[in-house]
Structures are given as C-alpha cells and as structure tokens.
Image 1 (cartoon, rainbow, N blue to C red):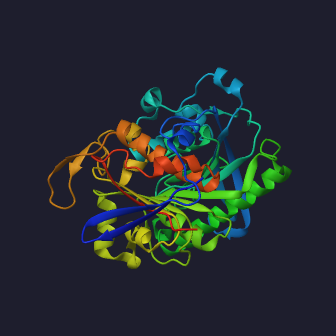
Image 2: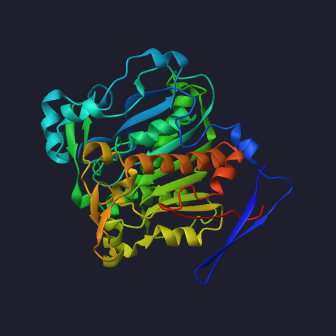
Length: 397
C-alpha cells in the first residue's frame, strides 16, 4: 500500500496535492507497526570489531587502513536479563585506562561522572537475534567519533536494523588500534577525508557481506544485503550523499546537518534532517569553502522520494549525543544566539528532538528499506509544527 504525494512550492505557499493510486496506507495499517518515535520491540546488542582494509594502505599508522567499528543489532530476548552497562565498559572498553586522560582533555568531560548519568541500553556481546535485518551504515562528523549518536544507533537496532558505525581513522577525534591512539588529522580534513569516507562506507558493506556469508558466525545469514541505508551527521551527512553517488548498493540515505559539493544520483530516496540555527553550516555556506551547497538545495533537486525535516530551534549538534556529554555546549545544545539576528535562543531540548529524529528516520528507513508502507501515514505529517518545518514529495510510480 502506498500514497502518492506531490508538493508544489509557489510564492511562499505550500500546496499539498494527494493523488491516490490503486491503494494507500491507512492509519490502521500504521497501527500494526511499532511507534517509530519509541524504542522498538527488540533488545539491542553491541559489539566492537577492528576491520582492516588492505586495499588502502596508510602511511600512518603504517599498514592497512584500520576502521574500529561498533555494530548494533537486534538481540535475543534473554538480553533483557543482562545487567545494563555504561559508557566505560561498553563503548570505551577497548581504550587502555591510562589513555582516558587524553580523551577527557579532548572532549573536556569527566568520563567517570558522565558514565553515571548516561542513558544507553545496548548490552555488549549479547546474542544476535534470529531473523534477517537491513544494514545501515552511520558516518560520524569531522573530529567526532563512532559513538557520537548512540541514541540513534541503538534506536534503529531496536527496530530491526544492523547498524555499523566506524571511526573514520584520521578524521575521528581519536581512535585506538592495538591500544595506540590515532588522533584527528586536521590536514586531511577536506580532500583526503572526503575521498576516504565514502570508501569506508563501501568497505563496511563489503565486510558485512562477508560476515553474512559466514566470516562471522554471529551475523551469518542475519543481514538483508539487498536493502542498505546510509546515515550520517555533518561531514557524515556529506558522506551519505557521496555514498549514494558512488555505491550502487545504497538504497536510501538520511543526512543530518550536512553539506554537499556535487552529485550524480538524483533518484535515491532521501530524508534530509536540518537545523535552522546551525552555526557551523551557516559559516561554511558564507565562506563558500569548496563550493558547499545546502541540504535544502539537495532536497529541492532530488527526483525520487524526498523528505525534509528542519528543526526551527535546532543547531549543528542537535543530532548528537552531546546533550548527555555537555548540556550547555551550544550550537544546538543548551542556549545560544540565533544566527540571523543574534537574539537569545533556547535550543530545543533532548526530550523533544530525539523522538522526532528517531521517528522520521525509523519511518523513512522502514518505508524504503523494509517496504513498511504503513509508515506513509507518519511520513505525511508534521509531528511538531512548533519545532519543525516539514515538507515531502513522492513522485508517481
């Protein structure tokens, strides 16, 4: 079932024309699906794997390109009985204790105190649930890390996806290979990382394909390799767009607070998540570095199914875990100033933005990776007009 929608923007007015095909998704059909804003029906497991791409050797660290990767996945029901773990023994378990001070100095956070109040729910090394699940690759922002948006990765796994998030070595704030720290390389920020990142996405798909075929018994036969999505934040948003162009196995993308330079794929289903008060994006667009273009323009030029979600009171880091790390961080977290007129601004809080980010992405990937057409109902509505600008268009089939 599906509903065909067209939106015409004219003179500031938005006119929605709904043409009904042979059948369309109804509210009752959506009711059979999990609420996309709430955690899904599955417990979540997480594991960390160091992959090495021998086809792309590096000068530093010398040898094959290392990609330390977290994988979130639907877990068996007995996972609910495993004691809940925190940041230190789950996501930073591979970090040698003496090196914690380096991380704390980079992110300006007391990790032990932070660990006491984090709200993560994946269980490390839980058994993978029986079933076949689509793959989503998540790409972090520049000078960020694979654990920058845990809330989202866990949420998607709870709805029946396997989510791979690598540290983009050299463009992550810090990653560890064999206990040795590799720091962010600012000199590789633009051309080098812009080339490496989409290649990292393709490599993630390659290694999961091998794992699905038996290279890792945990995931053997568990991955739907015919339905693959890519999501990412900031430079990861750029990576999502680039992956849609360069990787034919990608079926849908969800860039968050991103930019782009050029494109060739206009048909890939896309959910753009944007923020009206994003200071970093406004800065890049003003400076016109590398001829960056806005994600709004990307949405406007897309020819396939397209959805645009913009947070009126959101900033660059609205889509990240920094709400929990540094509550007064700014640019989407806590308070700040509007980019247009400098007026004081209270950014939308975590309990408002997370359900909306999760809701739209779950419904979008459900629709375009799983064929869950009942989510057309959710995708046809602005679920918080005070906080969101929302537009969408699905061309006739």
